[in-house]
Length: 282
Image (tube, rainbow, N blue to C red; front, side, top):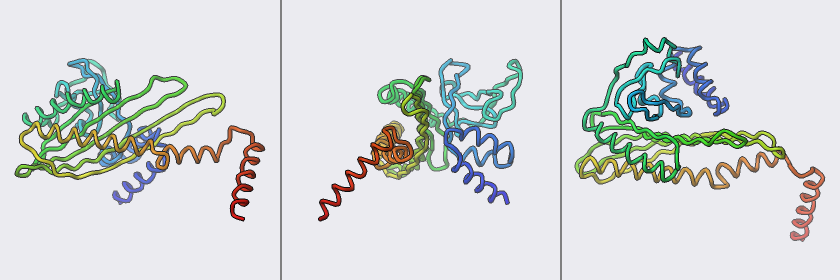
């Protein structure tokens, strides 16, 4: 029964607007609290930004740095409770207490910090702003982690947002490591003008890759994961920009639904085009 409810919830979320994924997810969790943990770990939603109480630096929230109603800051490596957000019950500010959860080992934490510094440089070069966070955790035969990137444009007539979620596993072998990377991009765009009216475009894309790469020490993992993330982001950006994949299809659909030129002019052009094709076939 629970499995059927979980599958139905995922099926429902796939049919609801991507722009309201967080709201829809919270409402489903309120109706079926027993599905909360499974849904939060299975459904990708736009990343939320919080400020580290100890360092004053922004970081991103996701299911991989969450422990109950607390989230681990990558800057302080401490869990912080954010009352009233993400389904957490609201409480008095004076009663908020630091929550303790599972933290990475000392070795994995060092790699997490080094990877975070590298992603900060990557973010400034590619995104020229935004927020990024990196979280690592231990596995029995290696380690795993997630690289998060978020960039939004200032609110106005044209708005947009990009969320990248790169989850990976690194399985240690003799002189190599086996990496499995699953990347999801959540994209949303909106614009308003007198000719077009209101338009909102949103969606997500997920891709996966596995690869064996040579390793000499822990710093090799940082280089390897960074290269995989950079290559995957470039590939997914190209797919989104390619006319036949995403924007081109949306342009064709919108063009068929709404015509800015008058219908008489559009019909005249179609008739001329058809007449030309017919004359070439003779």
